Image (tube, rainbow, N blue to C red; front, top):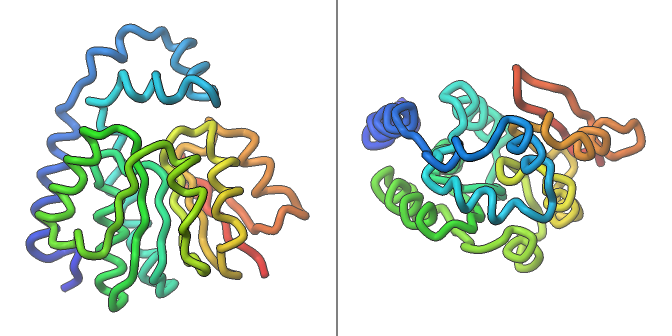
Length: 218
């Protein structure tokens, strides 16, 4: 058994995914498809956009969550940074990997206070809160200082347009071989251009339908 497949985490995740599947956000109907696409690419309107969609779960899939756990476990990750906590589902997977790796520290950031409250409750129920530091606020500020000197894994799963900026904040601390997982990276073409560039310092490949998996070179 692993932390991921044992109680209390396994039944908690099953319940959270069921809740996420049933959840709706009335505010999203106010945006046309073209307007949603525009806002997903915006570097200036993301706070207002995601703030209005605060009831939307924006959770990773169970398959992506399992992938996160496997990548963190197989690389022996001890220090993880996550951009975009939301309700904490991806955080639970990553923290479970830390537990099974023998411990560590996960720094995650979320600007919506109601989501921070719910994520803390989920992490507490899952028995993993002791491994996680949730920084409330805009990630451009919360991740701009006081980061560990050596980071093993970075998950990008917040406002897609900010992926290049968040990578820049963390990049100098990524150890050689560190992994960067970007969910829904197709909404950030500038980010994809950067990590796929031959001289960009990464080896990168699309993984599945919506994940870009990159490795920091030495």
